[in-house]
Image (cartoon, rainbow, N blue to C red):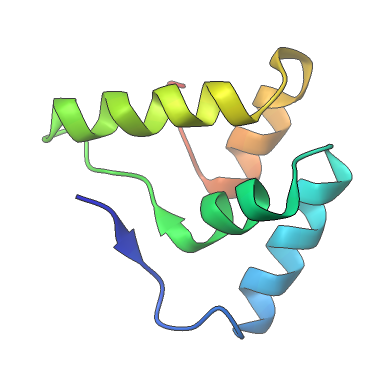
Length: 75
């Protein structure tokens, strides 16, 4: 299950969205990745769905930086 941050008006989320957009992500994709907490490894199905979405949204040459920005390990 996805867990959203309390507010999309959070200055940290807005800054993260801007950084992700600089990597070439569309606005909606950047907002999604900035405002969704990656699922716990204890829920493999949800985690695999999230990783699939991440890989679809982020170009291969930008994934390492995007993963670092959103705190995603083992992508």
